[in-house]
Structure formats: C-alpha cells, structure tokens
Length: 228
Image (cartoon, rainbow, N blue to C red; front, side):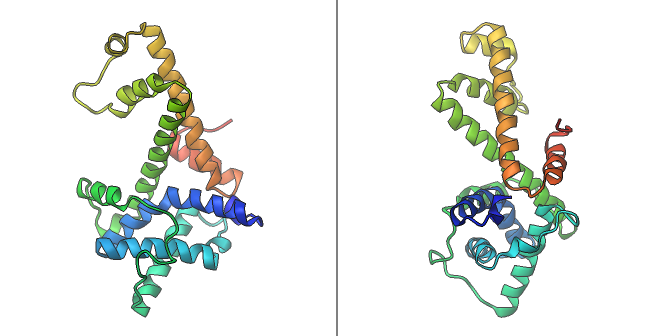
C-alpha cells in the first residue's frame, strides 16, 4: 500500500485513492450507526480522514490479523467514540477538508436504500465498500472510453450490464440495431469493456491493499475468482 511510502507525494496520492474508495461507507456508517445529522456526518468524515493521515492511524495495520477494511472500520469506531467523549465538533470548510466529496450523492443513496439494523452494520459497511469500488471502476471506464474514442463500447456495457435489472433489458440484437452495428461487434465491444472494467477495478484494489495475499483475497471476494 503506497500510503505507507516514505515519499510524501506518493503517500498523499495513495491516501487520496484510499479516501475515494472508503469515504462513502464511512459517511453512511456515521449517519446510521452513530445517528449523526447530515452536517455532522460530513464534518466527522473529513475529520476522520484528516486525523488518519496526521496521526497515521493505519500504521498499526497487520494483514495477518484482519482485512484492511475491517481495520479501518475499527479505527473509525475508535475515532468517533473519542470525538463523542470529548464532545468536539470539527468545523466544516476548515483545514480538516481532505478532498471535495460529493456528500449529496451519498445522502441521496441513503434515501433509496434499505438501512441495516445495528447488528448488520458491519456487513453494510462491507457492501458499501464494494459498491464504492465498483462505482469508481465504472466512472474510470467511462472516462477512459471517452478519451480513446470508445464511447460506444461504454454505452453498450452500460446498457447491457449496468441496466441488467431493468424490465426492458436490451439483447445483443437490440443493441446491434440501436447502435447500427453487427451483433459480432456488440459482442466484441462488450467483451472489451468488461475486460477494462475488471482491470480498472483490480488496479484500484491493488492500491488500497498492503500485501499480495490480501489483494488476492479481496479480489476473490469482489469477483469470485482466483487470480493467476
């Protein structure tokens, strides 16, 4: 994990990747488990990651004892318990802001999701982490396809894989007609997009895992495969 690098720039860049992968699960956990308001949860999310980098929360992580996401959740609970005891409230917009985070999108997702009870908050955190990683990979794929004149590849992937649960899911034949392509090209474009999505997902995962063993274990959890 590059966030433990001795190079300050590398460490900062790696930490930004870490924040983007984890901030939504952290924010939603604060809202649900700790019953904080929207505004307080924003402050505490920024405050947690600020404290994590300033105090090097993750230095004590041992991959032999737990997954990193489990360790991070433990650090979060400890941080929030301490904040609650001290009755400290971090001011928004101050020097505690780590990144510009789209809290409105996270809040909107909360409105349309089934909220867990206190017994299942750990599972909820893990599911939101998976959701966050997949969302990042989808967005990175979209940007990559747009920058390489492969927007149709992404649109076919989006229509077929991301809208898979809609009642009017497209078939290969429907997509071929819609995009004026042979069915064989639809098949090839979709295969390309799926390969790139998998690559981008794994690239991000590798950046936020410490060891090869942890990387492979998390990859199996995400994709259900053993990497060669």
